[in-house]
Image (cartoon, rainbow, N blue to C red; front, side):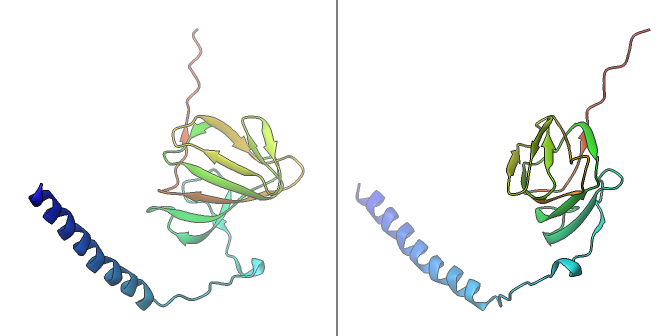
Length: 150
């Protein structure tokens, strides 16, 4: 029992010594505001995405790991049945995000778990813009329709 008490005290002392060091390191990192006006955002073709889909990376790198950014679907865009490896968090900014046939308009939040098969798209009458965040690289895995028997 005495050994256990000594061990617990040593662990607590170690944690108390590590915590200030970690906080001190965070204070040394220079933090600056990031301010991008909408007209300064550089829209590019979504890497690995369907034709016509555009994106702006706000942080991270969607080709290498976690990221956050904006995605734009052209009017009438529809993606066939597919899934993504990682969870996807979406907030609709303009138009609507269509998930399995249901439209979610501006201000809506959509969470799609990684591996969840779904159809998605925008709306017919306008482009759709949404904020997207994923904890890993962006991918789109199409679900092949079954082959017809002859």
